[in-house]
Image (cartoon, rainbow over all chains, first blue to last red; front, side):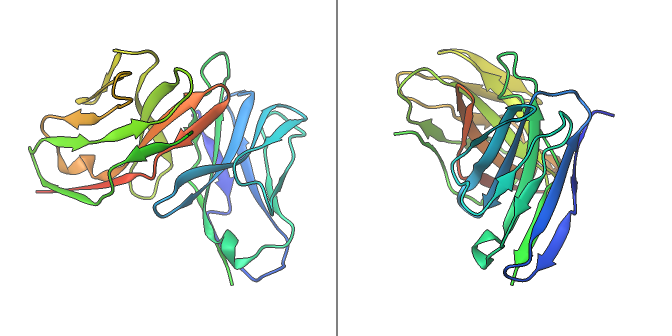
Length: 114
Length: 110
């Protein structure tokens, strides 16, 4: 089954404790992206990657890091989480051939930073 | 500007009612436009798309027409069902970038 998986689905952590949210897709997609969803703000893009070893900032990259060492994986790293990073996070992927808009989304990771 | 504006919810309807969710956008060029839907507890799914002016996207009884003159892409459905309860996002794409509206929560009651 074609899908995007994220882990963990739920996470409660404390300020300053480094964490990683994993994202994996099995569709051989080149393009992957991370978003955060906050009430009334829709989805805002954090980082995206056009292919292996190619990453770029989205609209709200501060406080986040990403890496793209393999095509299927695109982890999101919070080196020192803060309460304002409490949010619902989505990973997405697509095959760019002119169709980046047809993104497949993971189920989401709800992060709470206390 | 570079934004997508959609009506705030929640929108509460009875089954078989007519649904309209307004969406307007700002853009310097000619973006592609989409509606994504998020069912409870799930990620977003592409609902429909329109890639040029006057295109009409349709899927699952939903329709939206790309209106360049009014920079709008309103979503409509003639007769909603309880299963249409979800959050709907208007989205524009330009180059490698998607810009999302704030989302409109729709609740359909039996």
